[in-house]
Length: 245
Length: 345
Image 1 (tube, helix red, strand yellow):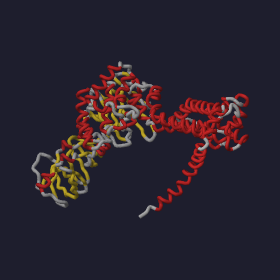
Image 2 (cartoon, each protein chain N blue to C red):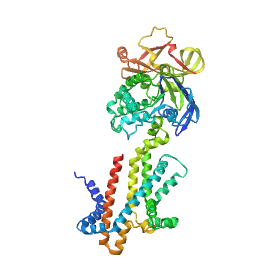
Image 3 (cartoon, each protein chain N blue to C red):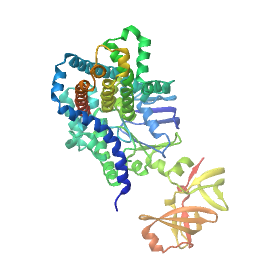
Image 4 (cartoon, chains in turn yellow, green):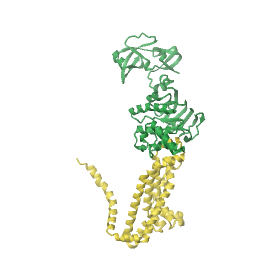
């Protein structure tokens, strides 16, 4: 007997898969037929600088999310304190705020300090992407059994020693996965950056710039470069994360 | 060696109520009790993971009640062994030694020595995730003993193992003890583990240490009804005593000593003799009983008997059961010595 139900599920389920894959394939294959424009874009100093800007700011955002997000994730995983639910909600809040609104709020709060500078780009990225690191770290720490930490204590490790030799390494995979999500979310951020820091130009803003000024065919090579670079770095980071754990 | 005094602790749904006991140097002390009795909580409070609400803990005469676990010199193996899954077996065992800042060579020597005794030398390079349950347990024991703790705490160490492996590990545990001469507290709900491994036992029921003593002593002479019931003593009878005899629902039982008023006694099932003919014996407690149940427990047969309204259990070997050709509903003669009876206050 044929399993019609599974076939039905496969047919329906493949819609989203194809829907996501189609534009990516299409733009990449069109670009392969037009390698000249990509080489031209690579020679464009503005394009190169914007790509460097995107990568450095996203990476800085990821590092900041680790420095501040891991301790917060640990507290949320292990401690019970007054207002814990409130703290958790605040961490998750940026997911539901439109990114243009994020930009307005940041500008309203920090004004000149973040206007059109690297700090502005990073602050916009951090706001919208930090929750990935915090939540993954929290889940990673929750998965580390407290009994294992107890054993390490009885073997002579202080609380901080246990954290660095047992808890952190065991949660590392989850933490790094979250950090990669933060990086990916940061490099794909546009809305808040447009408002806070139009300059220094990031690649994601430049794509929009070129599209507005010169049209689709000029914007496409940069878009493709951005896609390729994001994919490559994403894959490298994933590989690093899986080797580390 | 270890002295626990009036330890009380409330934690989640568990509580310990004024628990007191001592463990001597080199002793294998069993904490036996039903699940939910607070056994693990007691162990973890001794290890220093929890602070007691009340009471003191002394180790080698020193008050360690407020010492953090890393300065107690007490090793702990939780029920699931608590291995460090991101490390190899070698790194697990070396963990405590590294913290003690031993030389690299010295660490290697110590790890190899203990691994040799526990027969896990071949596993040292393996990731502990890939080891079987029995192997993991050996690594956990090696890791705990490598730091030469003053005392080793084991929480249900054999409960996750299949019966064959369990038997073997219990025998080996006795050898390891001889070889390494450690003091241990072993928490379990298994009578078998208690009898095979323990020197002394404490019975923990509902967070209270109901009785502490030599294994044989506690198993044969429970001091109160809770312990007797937990240990499976079934023949607990209540009656009114006047001097040396006890009146229970119309039958008179001779007591080992004088007693007065309402008391409870237990008659160990193994001390009851059964015969098809009236027994000629020096025992004063002779009764006629009706068999109303026969239960096979391997090589042993358990008979359910009634003397008037009183129900008793007795054990027979299978051989003598077949020999006597007993069947349900039959009348038999039973007899037990007064000295085999325990009286609860």
